[in-house]
Image (cartoon, rainbow over all chains, first blue to last red; front, top):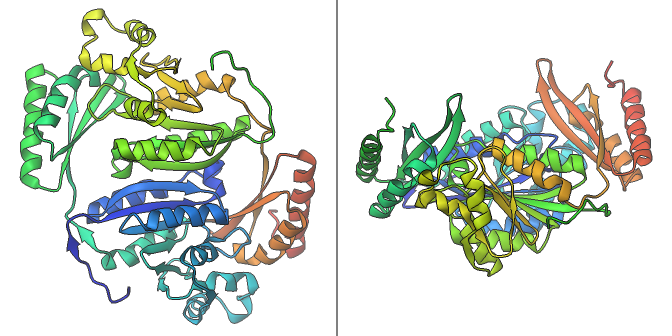
Length: 252
Length: 252
């Protein structure tokens, strides 16, 4: 993996597997899904599915095996710390059917940050890496993530996850970036839904989404036009703007 | 469903299916997962899995059928508006193998908020309800959600979703509420991981989680002890506090 360079193919997909009881109990509000979604979209990778599962080996293995067969990449967050509930690395090894050992490269990472006498048994757990995996550097707190097959295992703490994503991004295959334009309609969704459908049918190769929101003056609508082709995006967006002008609901 | 009353059984589980391209592209940051997780936990329902899928019929049907066979309830958010990309109701009907029709009860809901002349073809789409479903009232903007089998279909706009959840909550079967206590350790996870594992092994019926965070003075750890049994929670939490005091990392 470490030798890989960015490759442009047509469509590169990804899934995200968020691992952690604390997200499902609502105790911790996930901040990683939105960040990773925006990040991958910007570099030309389509995040196609997200799953959140508990710190449960069977659940992690099942989700991982379902996702890694289906998408170009699977990113995971959470469960790679030193405590008894951190079972991601062992679960990933089982999902791939490989052994897991304390990795001298990972021990070396840990020793960059701590004295040998602080490297207790619990912290050594953070150096358990499935056989055949490459490490993903952690510039924040040193304990590494890893990359095995098409699965990239990252920390759950947002600052650490973000740094790990920066580490792996240059090595990922990427596709053509999905471009988008947001056009605000000063009306409710139902006021534009009919003509919007006609435009969507006229430009089937362009993705057109409609997202209601409310501000102090009531419900409004954001129309989002998306395509990997700048020219197609431009003509479809122009059609949407013309439609809004005709209905007199274009933003002044 | 409408006649159902709250029933206390031992464990009631739920999955959440978030439907929407905008979450996967990162354009919209989901606010519903954390809200629903906290809400269900508080009323005694264990949120056990979350999936996010695109506005794609096959993806919605596959996820829904996987989840509804496995959990007591499945909640969905998103995709029930009037535009061409709102395909949740039709997809749910297909997942259940039932027909879908314009529902006079749903039309009546819409007419509470709009004049008959504003009820255009696009808005009538919001009254399409799978056969056999009960409506879920929408006190915010009237277009209803629905409840079919063990699947509860709600809007994606947070204010509307929250109001719908309030509508259905009194009708849900609920289990014993999962109690929890958070104990802050003034140290890194790796400093308490060993003794914490010993406590977790001593109280296998209690769930003990460890969550690192960083504040201005560096990495700290929240230890979260969870049980449905208040007495067991109390003894395990006491064991954690004693351990922290012994290590001299209890919060002053």
